[in-house]
Image 1 (tube, rainbow, N blue to C red):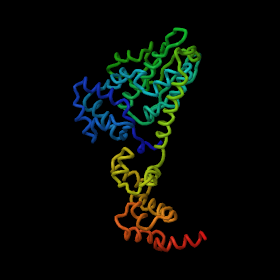
Image 2 (image 1 turned 180 degrees about the vertical axis):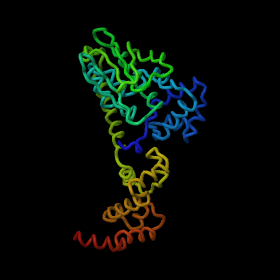
Image 3 (image 1 turned 180 degrees about the horizontal axis):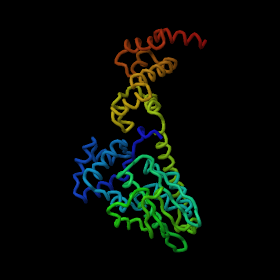
Image 4 (image 1 turned 135 degrees about the vertical axis):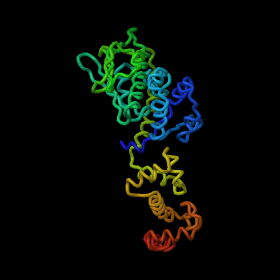
Length: 343
């Protein structure tokens, strides 16, 4: 996964902000430190760059000293707060389906964190893997996600009336000074400095049927999660491919470096740096996209002036010069040659 290309959904920022307000933090100042404001975060499908998210979390955890921030946020995350993700989980047929759903779709809510499970000696071992964060940020992310998953497991309504019991919780970091707050994990036993972070519970729950399941709601929610997953997976494209994808869209050649960076939820500087790492530049990609589209437009009966305007040129003369630099002939000569070949 190309981490420098990934942006994060702002889905849970409302809970983060609620916790910050309860701690007396000036939220507007906190967001402004990374060039953000509340209006941006609550916009439909809003996202922030990994750099912005990491910097914001470091200010809270390391600078402000709120080391237990992950616990505080995790305790607020009930199944009803996860949107279509939570709706699908509530309408799974049984716990096995719930866990398989989490294994497939957790990334659309928490990129870089994956969940898997195995059955060992009649126990389910559900493991969390963090592929990005380290130190205090890693601890906070694991805390929040682990508590959210435990809250989800406890919210499931089994038809036989049983309640799932988390027997053990393992963490791949040392015990924090606020270990007493790990009661929120609702686990009978806690173990720190382990090889992985995981929770364990009896496998007898796997096949237990859930109550009040609505298959229609489940299928609708899964379909929407599939759409989110497809968008998330597109972020695995190289930066060059992602830029070209935008430039090849309708009127994409009108986009500036700033426009493209904004659409990719990264800074202009980050975009420039990542393209340099791939041995290309925005200017070269824009010229390439214009060259590619110019032939398509001219072959579809666009005039030289119309083609120039479509490709974002201020006047036809600039377009004609560019076209000749690409193909060695003028647009009119190319059209003439193309029309002769089509006879």
